[in-house]
Image (cartoon, rainbow, N blue to C red):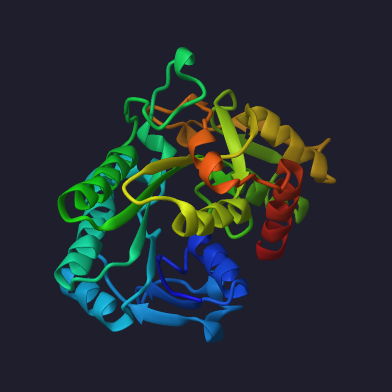
Length: 319
């Protein structure tokens, strides 16, 4: 049993990781801001320890780390909306890089030695060439969004603190992961929420979509957090690991599966909405996860069909 600190515990991934760690009998602390909605952790709020911490305030972070003295830190907090990053590039880059610097500086100055998971993203690879598929950790960065720039910075800060100070950082570049509790920013949630509203006659039977030709490899968030758990238990620090699923399809094919679950499938019309198109997008997002699997033996177990069913059901209960 260890003491784990999850930054961004109230978020999509953080809340699922908290569920898993509770099942494993670990003592859990989580950072939150006073304005953070707690819907995702309402069912476990009395089982975890929440610490009010602003990751952009170095003193706040220092106080948090000193108070908790964690064995493991899962740094998941971020501005994670890729589309929003085009509207707020400075805020996105500042948030994602500075929060990481403050966290690592606090650990260094307090002379602590926790294992630290720095959660980067597959978005750092950006515009992929066909001869680079599947994408390995050695692939060049060609970022196509301010979000990706912020995640490259976060990723490299994690590496730098390992090389310069010997801090036990582990970096992951996780490919698209979906599941219940996902905010209305991911493509699957955008579709599922609309379908749920159409089913309840809260929206006309017109489904607004962006680019349906982008290729994605989908993973269930509940499989991803199991990967994060294995990461801190089994992987040597200083390294970076791709984490991703084994189901690669076009966004349009994923939408077809989602529509099949709905009793309104024959009545829904598909319409491209320019507002859902990014100025530039990642087209081929297909991971090579051999490095991580070789060390941990991890394999995703939840089927895409099951994941999509659970997401749609979650939105049906929410709208």
